[in-house]
Image (cartoon, rainbow, N blue to C red; front, top):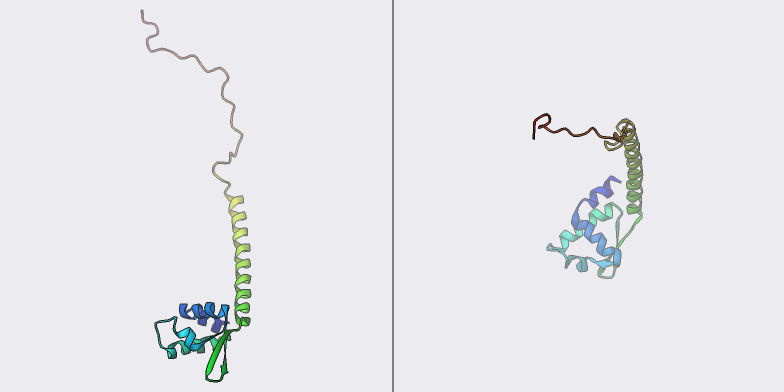
Length: 130
C-alpha cells in the first residue's frame, strides 16, 4: 500500500488516473495533455504500473493504458478504517469534555426569582423643603 500512496502523491499521476477512469488511452493520447515529453509520461505510467493502478497492453504499434482499481480499493478501505477510528476517538473526546466542562450558558443552579415588589426609589432631595 505504501507504493500506492507514493504513486498517488504526484498530481500528474492522479490526473492520469482521472483521465483513464473515463476510458483507456494510448501514451500519445495522454502525453498531449501535459507539458512534458512522451518519455516523461511513460515514466509516470511506470510508477502507476508498479503500484498496480494502471495496466499497459500492446496493440500492434500502440500501447493502450487502462486503470486497474484493485489497489485503489485497498487504499480506500484503509482510509475508511482510519476515518472510522478517528471519528470514534473524537466522539469519545467530545463526550468526555462535555461531561467535564458543561457549556457556559447552561445554568448550574436554578436562578432565584426576582423580587415581586421592588423597594421604593428615594430622592436625593428628600427632607428638603420644596
